[in-house]
Image (cartoon, rainbow, N blue to C red; front, side, top):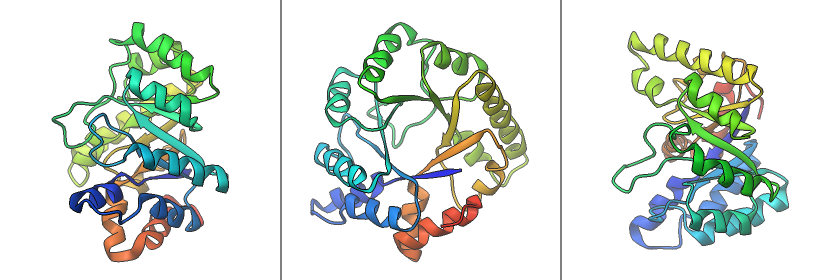
Length: 242
């Protein structure tokens, strides 16, 4: 199980006061020292947290340390240009709406297949692995494979919202079935959204899931534990030695 820490909300805190601190790149460096396997950052159209300069600085850090950089972005021409310049190891294509607080729901890969096909290929031609952030349902997973993607990231928001209620078991089963199906058709399986120290232990029992992208809860935990402590605590919850 790989842990990729999403450092978006370090930038959210920085941008709230218009300062240069806290620096998301320094946060990323601390996460890696504590044992994280990679860093995720979402460059949104409205630049509400991560900014272009952060992306280039993260690229430099991760190239120096030999860790994976996962750039989340919408499938727009502007973002493709940035991705082709930055060359992260992985691009995760996500839906994006200006009015949302955070990415809610998975990408409609089937509905956007005509556009996504050449878009995905253009990134792959540059040596970038492409992942789609989708719901754990067969048609979205199958079209992700048909489009040539190497990976899918399963949207875990419904499970996170249901955690602690009887509905959690149903959502966990749905994720397990989706992960098995994706694995069977040759996709690498990641997962993310709303994951916390409390709800990840059950999720990691799904053996087909090999990577988690976790951000908001870890940055919240860092207030009390420090960013290195939050990283080590999450690795422990995943059953991974730091």
